[in-house]
Amino acid sequence: MDETAPQKGTVPQRAIEQIKAMIGEGRLEPGQRLPTERDLAVQLGISRSSMREAIRALTVLGVLEARHGSGIYVTQLEAGDLLETFGVVADLSRGPRLVELLEVRRILESTATALAAARITPDQLAEVEKHLTAMNATDDPEVILAHDLAFHREIAVAAGNDTMAAILEGLSSRTFRARVWRGYQEEGAFERTRREHAAIHRALVAHDPEAARAAAAAHVGEVEEWLRAQLGA
Amino acid sequence: MDETAPQKGTVPQRAIEQIKAMIGEGRLEPGQRLPTERDLAVQLGISRSSMREAIRALTVLGVLEARHGSGIYVTQLEAGDLLETFGVVADLSRGPRLVELLEVRRILESTATALAAARITPDQLAEVEKHLTAMNATDDPEVILAHDLAFHREIAVAAGNDTMAAILEGLSSRTFRARVWRGYQEEGAFERTRREHAAIHRALVAHDPEAARAAAAAHVGEVEEWLRAQLGA
DNA sequence: CCGTCGAGGTGGTCGGACCACTATGGCCGG
DNA sequence: CCGGCCATAGTGGTCCGACCACCTCGACGG
Image (cartoon, rainbow over the protein chains, first blue to last red):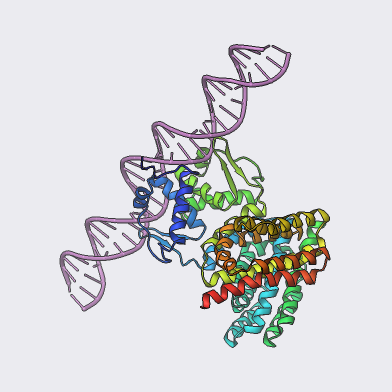
């Protein structure tokens, strides 16, 4: 018997492993187009439905990208594509785990900010300042939130570690922060937030890693403490 | 017309959002069983195929769990369930991004080890020691790797932040470390690794957070440096 | 030479059929 | 009466074939 299917796990799961293996072995380069769903199904000896499930799974993971009418492609496997799932975690987490996520963010954000203080270029610094002033120029919470996110994103990018930036992006996902900050900012924390952002900015300008680390840690820590108090109440 | 489908995005994508919303709004509790695929498909006005894709996607993300012959259940939404996919990222990353992932791990691992030094209980310490001695008692790389993973996992758990432990678990996934360490250990790094583990252990016993942080950072940093050199060569 | 439009190929969706597995409850033997 | 076995109904798993929506690219006409 040629027995190409050694019967391990579910059918789509096997397909997922095989495609992952193809990528891992370099047989599929990023950006390259895969055979059609129909062909792949025939190659692996499974039905198109199962193949679709496998492709869907890999699409969710950010490994593949399906373009309607065109074909299936391997993504660039960049940090952003692969770490999108972090946002899902943040969105579905609640209670104590929110605090844990904020703690992780505090650790990474403080280090990222410290690295940024040492490495940031004038161009990047200008970008950071743009969002800082925009944030202080309005009272619309939506606009503030958007620039707040961009402010921290620029800093994370300036730290020079795209993977870390992508993780922080997920940990600061829009819905996540909107949920937490809704209550936080209602307590008149605008002013404090502005002071903290200013402190971070000063540390970046001074290229002072230690000050940047402290400022960023305090910034996230403030929210963390508030949330902890909310849960304990 | 009642127009329940405002036509946004693909069909399965809409279904995913709706199910996520159900969970987010608390209409679906962790551990609870969902309606059958067939019923859900009818409820959302889509075909079972599309519903299956949506379920598959949420299964991959660790939000749902399908038990053949029994039904579909909401997971406990614990950090481990949701961050399992993180391991996939580590497995598919290569080159410069491996260094970035190690850098993130160094930051988190050092902090986690420092926290563990302050909080670890005698029981947990005993568990850590068990893996340490087991690791030093053999020359089988497979066994060493297994106990090495367990060693760091116990420490991460002792740090008291399950989310961080889950992330570190992903960053240290089996295939990831196997790939990197294969070459690393070939260069006679066994002895150095043992010394570093011993240093971490001493810091834990002494409940000395700063020493623990330094030891852990050095431990991961060693591998990081080696990998960086490999890539530059 | 360039813009238009058509055909072919792609992923997206659908419905139905059947298989594999699990759980439940009744039946049978003790 | 009790306990384990087993038939059965219901679940997710897989497959098939058809059709739809969309993109691509080349032939055609201006």
